[in-house]
Length: 331
Image (cartoon, rainbow, N blue to C red; front, side, top):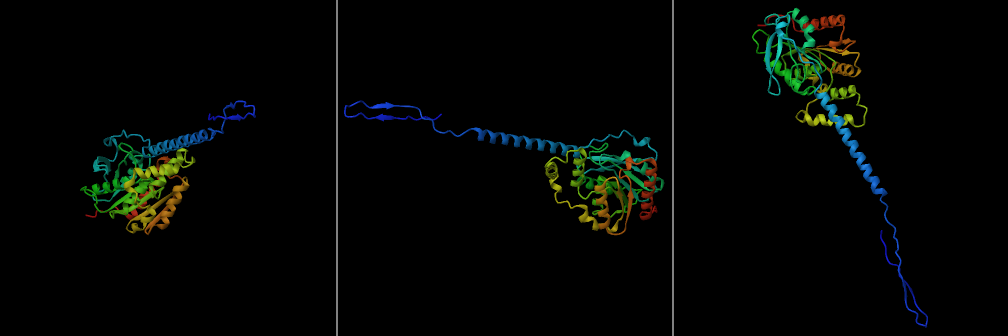
């Protein structure tokens, strides 16, 4: 408290009365501490909210890039179709292996690119249908899926991995080195279309539930977890994703590169149970050059189809590849 002395001086009359000095404390107005406390409380609350937002965003980003998958406990030797292990080099420099189901010697090869949170094991029935029609069929696991270590990049590294697979298979003595087909769904579909823009040996593509850019799949996964409605969550996860994959920041969306696929036949499979990916698949189909076809299905996930739906779906895929990749010996 600030005080000062108040001096009261009384002067005597002519009789000479002494000076009378009275001192008393004088209180001056003091600035209240309420405003400072309020500001501190607001700053503390903002810091807490920012920390909470960043923590939630980091958790969601981790969940998206390290999805829960089931390891494959199937030995290829136990499978029908006599598959062989083929090793290839992954983008991170490690050696991976896939299963090659042999068809007719010198026939084209169909590479099956599984979807997000899936694995090669889910595609064995489709592989069997293609092999029965004398195609060579190759199955593998993207990073962070099945038996492959690491984390997914939602499409960036997967594209490079698929290109490495094609390059490896082209060196196999019993396969046609110039004719490949790729089937893919969501993650695999993105990688297939992106790879085909750089690889002319991919002559036919059957893709479903396609997204235009990896950030679109990230947003879809955040929404599926149920936290996408929180303020700024999408923005924070998006920027975190961009920082993690800074080297891929110049990657163009599929809609900007699909006009390069004039040399590949394309079958776009549009799902009705996923409006977002169904619409993107439709728009890419409309933008794609000929030759192209469209198929509309009730369910976009091959794994979730009923047996009757799978048989119809498999027949459509086989028919498409037979049309554009006839099983003939080219050498």
